[in-house]
Amino acid sequence: MKFTPKEADSEVNLPKLSLLGEFFILSGGIFAFILIVYLILGIAVDLTVPHLPPSVEKALGAHYSAMFDDGVRTKQEIKLQKIVDKLSANTQRPDIKYMVHIVKSPDVNALAVPGGNIVVFAGLLNQVDTENELVFVLGHELGHFAHRDHLRGMGRGLVLFALSAVLFGADNDATNAIANGMSTARFKFSRDQEKKADAFGLEMLNKFYGHVSGADSIMKKFGKLDKMPKYVYFFATHPHYTDRIKSMEEIARKSKFIKGKQKKLDPVFKELKYGEKKDKIHFGF
Amino acid sequence: MYDTIIFLAFLFVGFMAGTIAEQSHFKSLKKREKKMVSLPAVTIKNALEQGAEVDKVYLVSGSCVVSLDYFKRVLAGLKNIVGGRIGAYETLVDRGRREAILRMKEAAKKAGSDIIVNMRLETSAIGQSANQKNSLGSIEVIAYGTAIVLKK
Image (cartoon, chains in turn purple, green):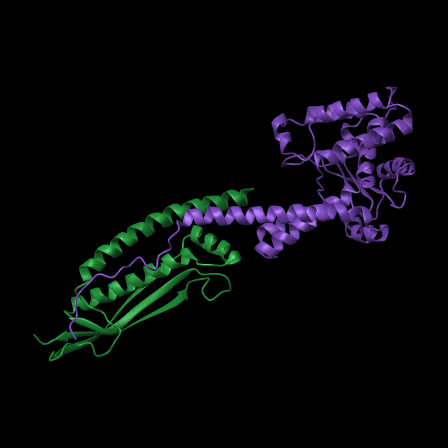
């Protein structure tokens, strides 16, 4: 047998497509797919939530209630509870048993957490000067409950968690971060939901005092504290405070709400002690 | 946030370093293959010309260990979701095979061989992530055969 040296085509085993192009097509396609699934499931959540019976809502919230309930009621919590009980008698959700928790943290924030939990951070109470302002903040959170925003937030969190677990595995960094976000209950709602909750709070305020002073003053304080430039709000969950004030003024004008004298806040709230926080302080309610 | 930045940085570094290394490797493979084309390596056992007499026989082998870069690993992971041809792995095994054969031929050439018969190729996954589900770190490709020196 005679061997004739000849070069063979060595390129047959190599990929035809550029790997970078393949990477962009793949990651773009997968991202688009996730986005579509997330949007569809998000709509499914929105459709389901209004039909959720109170018993299911209670069972869902049990985990969160256990997380915030330390068994001890401070005098500030009892005071807040009294206000919430009075306010909630006027809401469409009398089936929920509301529970106010104060978290000793400098965050200027309040949350509506499933299970009827209203979480108020000490940093926010420190900023509040009148009872009217406090009533507005609590009314705003009650608005989230009335519109079932807390369940929507939870449902979307669940969808995100499930998607991440399916795609990246249950023990992935991304999945863990989402799971953590859910368990600390930093519920984020859309800007539209926030404005609706503002309107609800404003109405509560009017029912309680017969005028709506306090809503704008707490919002202005909040705006002064928040140093973020306005364009950031394009991506944020909460609308910019000036927009919130503007839309509240609109509502006040339409509903003929009047301004009035505000009631001084019980000094007991200024006694709250909370530690310094090193990392970023969260704003928003 | 930091996780994402680190991930993207790894992706970028992996892509740049991986591409540069791969391209220079392919260039060198082509050049050396051209040089070695006169030394045949065949998989059959009886490849000698009629009348040729064997002087000496050696076992020759060439082995190569080559690894994926971070970018290719991520790309292969993405491709695992949708399926299909995984180009990222294809270049890896191709480089491994060709390099191993070349090294075997270089060893045979040093011994003055005229032909390598009964050549075989084997591949194994080695390194930390070897034989784990859904992961491929580095591969070892070994080429071995019988180098024959003919009587002149």
